[in-house]
Length: 213
Figure 1 (cartoon, rainbow, N blue to C red):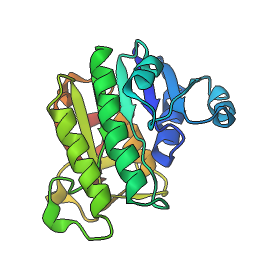
Figure 2: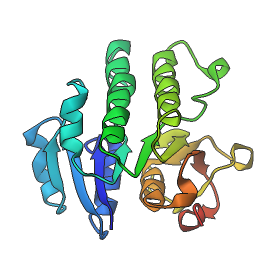
Figure 3: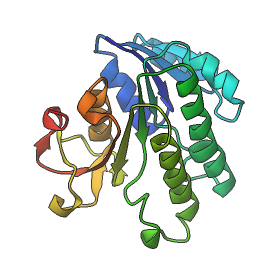
């Protein structure tokens, strides 16, 4: 059993992670911006904690407490401008990484994006998002944390298939269901084979249970 903290639990991927972890043996806390969001997660048997990624690192550190595993699946969302993307997806991630280091977390799981290391593929409209993901990943890789960086393709709300591929050349599509991304996050918790790894995630034929076997 691990003490797991979900940053971005109220997002689309985060909600899937929270739901899947509600049936686990892990002790799970979820970081939320508003008490108005608490009831949904309390109903799952999880512990809500106030967390604002725009506050200072010390406040994030206090929220994390003695968590063993930190899952970062926060994002500013497509309806915001580049300023919020930088404040949440980059600065929020940077402060969370620093806070997890200070708290001696055993694992930091980052939800990144496909092609975050390939600037030549970034469109002008998506460039702030990819810049944020690229440099957040670099900060995490340069940290002392056992990181697991997951880079899903285009996210869909389709039902998960329970299978993925980590090889882009083996994929028939560049997308993946959010439910499957969440399942991979859950499967990676405490798996040493996922430590210090950057992993592409797309729809595929490999059972999620086998990804870290």
